[in-house]
Image (tube, rainbow, N blue to C red):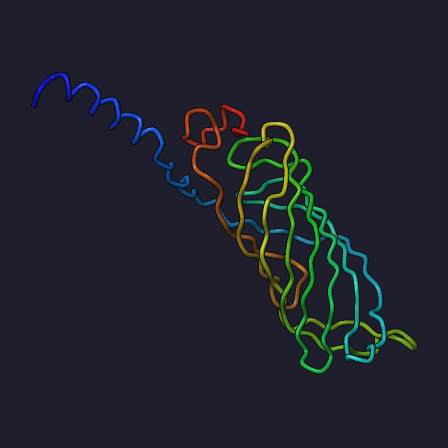
Length: 189
């Protein structure tokens, strides 16, 4: 091929490769974490409305160990669909102070809630939710300190007969400048 045509062709190929989308970062597993609910607050659920829905709130806090290390504060808002026994809702979790794979700061986590429950009398005239199963998803919403820019998501499950919760999931590989999760650098923004 003539050099006169080869040079523009090589330049065009370089531009085409530069314009190609970069593949999504591979996900690195965050070790499973065990949250132990030490103190909690909640309260009665509302009497069922015309659709058979009762509304409630649950909050507790305590230590977490594993991939997340530190202290967590859970705030959950949920609906018990009394006709089916299904529970759903949303909430927030703050891990503060928090260490994830050697990096320290604070993490704000958005959670969803799903499960099974019944509404029972817990002392006249109050109704309470009696959970038979509870779990959902979690997604890191924001972070501070060395955890600024950390993203990740996974699932959580409340262990039977306790308020303790098991969290598992992943975060992007390369949260530090070396990409080796050594904890010696801040997460990329």
